[in-house]
Length: 298
Image (cartoon, rainbow, N blue to C red; front, side, top):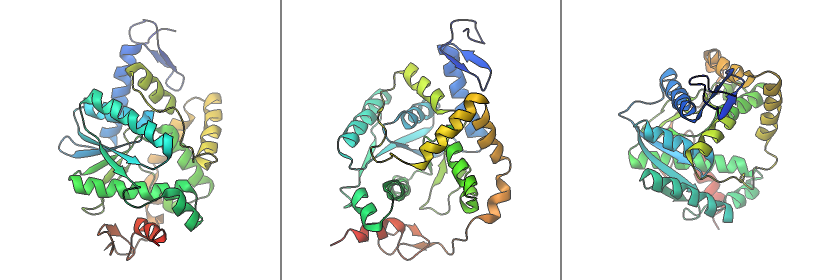
């Protein structure tokens, strides 16, 4: 297997692109795909401050490194979820990358905020992943506002977004389909723009880049993600991709061309208010996170 560009030995073959690259040209390809996504969807401009949400996994750490090298003004934020050894290890991976990039990450501890994901999930009879998502979104918005950053960037890749899209299509959740753009605009000064610059790259492609760049990331999945429906959707899409290379790309990025058809189907939100507890934006008197936090109060 030879590199398409220079005919040297290739380190990766990509059937969906019908190509292969050596280490040098794969790096160029990877950066080009991120830059194209940013330009095509209008994600970032050099003047904006970017809060990169890092978990210790490959996707978020790769995103941090790439945006940093592309010259964007980045700050990384790690949320300590309070999951014992898993959280300790993932935090260490974040600091390992921070040292290489000569940056100091922001660390937000849910425990210090008086919040326990598992206790809240039990109290509300909700899956841990659902409660975790609410807590993360709250921390993203609040930290970006407090740090004066205009954009929140997450490491969602093509596999992540295609599997989410499949789930929403299977249930025809049109109000969620309306939000499946890789860019969600800001709604107010308290809610920064959300972007996903890795949407043109698969999980495998991100993993290969992380390996070649020597990025030290946590290999273990979140201990509470077992049984998540998104994993099933990823497996189904992987089987289709094996038979028909390019399926995930055509499914998700093709959907973006028709996204406007779902914009009117988004569920009405009502008037944007200020949470009476924390002061952040909310469509109710108390925001979702503060309602969960209130459930844990004695």
